[in-house]
Image (cartoon, rainbow, N blue to C red; front, side, top):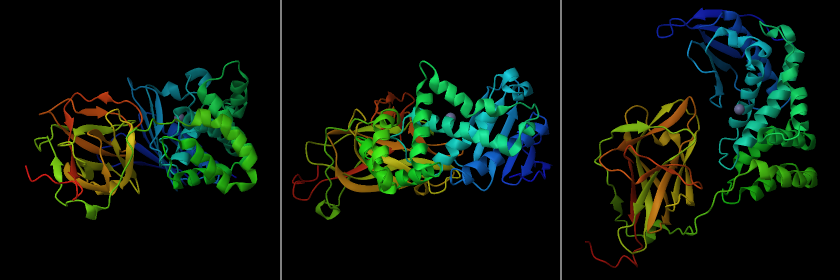
Length: 431
Ligand SMILES: [Zn+2]
């Protein structure tokens, strides 16, 4: 299948005075600092790779893939995606756009690889159980297959510095897999390839959807992931189970559960007169969005009684263009091991200035000392800022549930909690 070659290049309005936009069907590239021929080739590569992910992998892809190409002296060589519909490529000089043999940069493969991340992340949004090797292995495997197919569609003249980019496809992956000690990403790519031999190329997307639909217990994720795979491919139960004994070791990380058991209570059994734990001065001294981490704050119950958490209140603001994005509010022990996790929509937060946002949770008993950890999983184009207050310090961490966090040293996150007690045990009078 040949893609239409009609190309429109326009200049963007104020603010992007030097950026030119190249638009073709299903791809658009904003380019700064490089000749428009590169932007056009980038757009054509993205559009062709998109077709392969759609037709051969049955993945949900954006109607238009947006690329940003920025070439500027001093810029580091980077290519990444927001996991939805954007690719960002930055390079220190135009020479880095040449064929890999000259530039050392695998731009064509890189784009096919990033679209692979997009194909997975658009569907499988909650994947805290997944290792980095599994995510990168998928993009490596899929990117290698897709670049071969892009060559079939577009040939070697696709890139302004023409070369046979099939060398960066499955031929390279096969060589890497046969090497004496392949790295974790390569081995994971090999496992994804094996899965395709069981469920077919269109099976991946089905599996991503199924995995997103289940509630994965991060303290024992492997069982529920396999069970869900077997549910959608019942005819392949045996080979899937066999595959998973190897793949799970590479794909899955298991979070340490807290020894403190999650105990819930019906709200009507509580006094309805919650105590607020707040030690900030109500004025933020800064705000942060944390990629690959979370905002955690320690609390201690007011006394030896039985205390249940009712509400987490966060001084924060949403930014970007999150659609249906969710975040986690986790009740953890002081080692950040999870006791209970609640999903909340990004839309709970407003845009613009930081504002206190109340997040009611299922009344759940808290340990004497505990942490509340907020995990937003921000990307290049969406996230939530959480304010911090530097009038106190030492109670806040950066980290995710199940892994020991690191101290946050600029102050304490502006997170408050409301605790309540059961009517029958709240015997003490107001203090
Ligand atoms: Zn990657």
